[in-house]
Image (cartoon, rainbow, N blue to C red):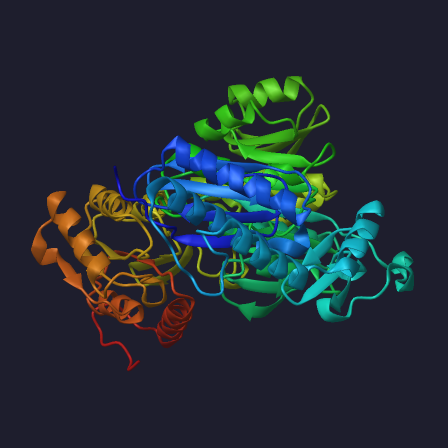
Length: 587
């Protein structure tokens, strides 16, 4: 009989998640897939203990995957830490009973003694219970107000209509001026690629519409036009930071896969949600091993829309098209071709669509078509060659329409957004040094790199193609090799392999670069055109130092500090009139 590993991870679920539309806890069991007898024993113990603790009935379920199983249970919002303890105890007690293995963890519920475990878990539950919180949450729900909760604070209302209190000093419900609280319009943006660009473009449309916008993304927190905090804020913490800011009239939240899986969504209601696409990325984490499962994670955002919200989907993504058949919310479709069969059929049913026809971007809604301009004239499309940004534009257009922004305002923004580097930093930025062209982008997975190299090589001519290549450490080896395969398929003349210092995530320095090197050689590339320079900024400098006239240099830069340093260097080189083949200034 295979050995059962206890568990890899146990965590709270503080919002809508992969398992259910409520809060609770999840435990990740790894190694051998548990047999059904063990899983049923776990579920029975959870249900019995919840009854003993006086918790209401709710979902208790498991999800079997390639590495084991995820075990999830719903729980009262003021009992989530206790819920993790219940989950762990039920699992370990089930192993103890069925496999005669004993686990002892001082301070936690005894896996070998149900009476002792009940005593311990009741003490945890009593310590965590917050009666005032329950009253306020019910009062907020009765008034259709969003409540946001973390370890320290409760807030009710959103943005300009929000107010917050410490959990240790909550007011009575009748002491709150409820007339001063309200929610604000909200958009959620997820997908494998294009999220940040779509968020920034939509934010520009909201600003042009005259509203105070706040947004969170993998690049930071932005209120109005000011970046108030740098870093990856694409999870629930970033959502709360924006939604509690009283200068915000409309919020846009980049919603990453990792945040959904770790904690769940940061909100329970939204007016519009977008899934840009689904492609191979982050397989192996939290029991997600294939595209179908990844799509299911991304589509959790649809659960926030209710009967009045709008889900914006990519009709060129066959997986999203298939998944959409099971959804009950209203949908708007975008595609590169406005004549796409799904778009045509959707318009016949009076649905909203966005696509390209005869070189122009068309928004169709309520039986009318709006010409938003020539695609090649939109800076974000790089003269029409950046097809992935045309898709991002379609997603932003439909979202803006759902938020009440006029077609004229949308068209005006599309005519200008992307012309300045500050519009979309770190995404498809372009410099020219004589006949040398340099592209900088995030391009964090195989599909993103393919899109970036497709744009760049259209400018190549007869010169060399050079590339800096690296990957985060929390990808499976297969994903890292697929990135190398994409790079090799464009036949670069020079490759500099790097690490991403802040994203090694358990791998040794140079480990990812070694996998990339091996796969590049396996794909037929000569070893003498591949060099290693693990520091990300130094790798970019190395590629620039060896760049030649007529070359196209592609820099996928991922670390925020490295990106800022590379952009500053490129701007300095441009201002000084630097040309390829001459010395670079000192760092």
